[in-house]
Amino acid sequence: MQTHNQPQDLLDVVIIGGGPIGIACAIEAQKRNLSYVVIEKGPLVNSLYHYPTNMTFFSSSEKLEIDQIPFISKNAKPSKAEALEYYRRIATSKKLDIHLFEKVNSVKKEENTYHIHTSKSDYTAKNVVIATGFYDIPNHMNVKGEYLPKVNHYYNDPHYYSNQDVIVVGASNSSVDAALEVYRKGGRVTMVVRGEGIGERVKYWVRPDIVNRIEEGSIKAYFNSTIKEIREHEVDIEDENGHKKTLKNDFVLALTGYRPNFKFLEKVGIQLQDKEKKIPQYDPQTMETNLKGVYLAGVICGGLETHKWFIENSRIHAKMIMENISCN
Image (cartoon, rainbow, N blue to C red):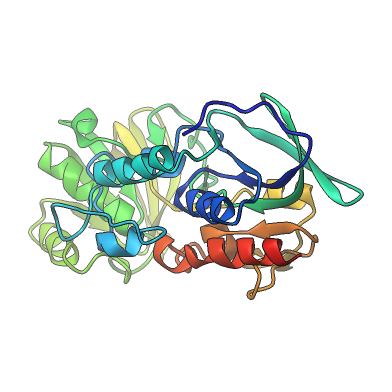
C-alpha cells in the first residue's frame, strides 16, 4: 500500500470501502490508468478483521480470489487469518493507494464532479464507488436491556465466555459457530431461536454437530421463542404461545444479523427501490445508481437481503464499473 497521497485536484474515482471488493475495484482502476483512491474507515478489510477469530469461510479459497491471484489455503475452507494475509499481500504487492482509518462524512455533487469530505481530508472525483459492505450495523432486537454491557452483537473468541451462562440468539451460521465454540470452551450455552429449528443456510458440515449437541442436552435450545427483557443476571424469554420463562444469564450474544448503512446511502442521494427489502437502485449492467457517476459494488447491493451477494459473486462488479467509467 502506498503512503498517503496529498488529495489531487481531480480524481477519476474515489472508492469508499477497503474490503475485498473495494480492493478489486482499485486493481481494475489501476489497470485502466484511472486516478483513484480507496478510503477505509478502519483497518484493511475491516469487516473481515472483525469476524470471529476462529472463523472459517463457507467458500473454498478459489472463490475468494480477486484478479485471478491464487489464494493458497492449507485447508479446504480458508480461515480468517489466511484471508487477512491474502488481501493484505495483494494491497501491498499491487501498491494500491488505500487510506486507512479515514471515515467518509459526506459525498456531495458539485456540477459534474463529487466532493468527498472525510475525517482527514477532502477529495474531488468524477466518479464514486460505494463498496461498504453490511457488517457495521447490527439488527437490534429492540428489547429492554439490549444496551447492557453484557450484550454483544459481535462475537470474537470463545475463551472469554468460559464457565459462564451464555445465551446465543439466532440459528444462523454465526450463531451456531458461536454456540459450539463457547460450549467447547466450557460455557453453558442456551440458544434462543425465533424459528422452529436450526437455519437452512447453516454450513452443511456444522449442522449435524449442533443438532446432536442440542439433542443430547449439551446445548439447550428454545425454538419459536424470543427475548423479552435482559437484566444484569437474568433474561426473560417468551414462546409462540405466550409462555414466559426466566433464564439465569451472564452474557448474551445477539447474533441477529447485520444491515448496510442505509442512512449513508440516502444522504448521498441513492434511492432505495424496494421499501421492504431496502434494495438500492442501480443498473445491473453497469452498477451505476440513480446518480450519474455513483456506483455500488459488493454485498451492499442486496439491501436487507444480505445472503444474496458474497465475495464470490460480486467481485465481477469491479470490472463492470471500471469498464463503464473508462468508456464515459
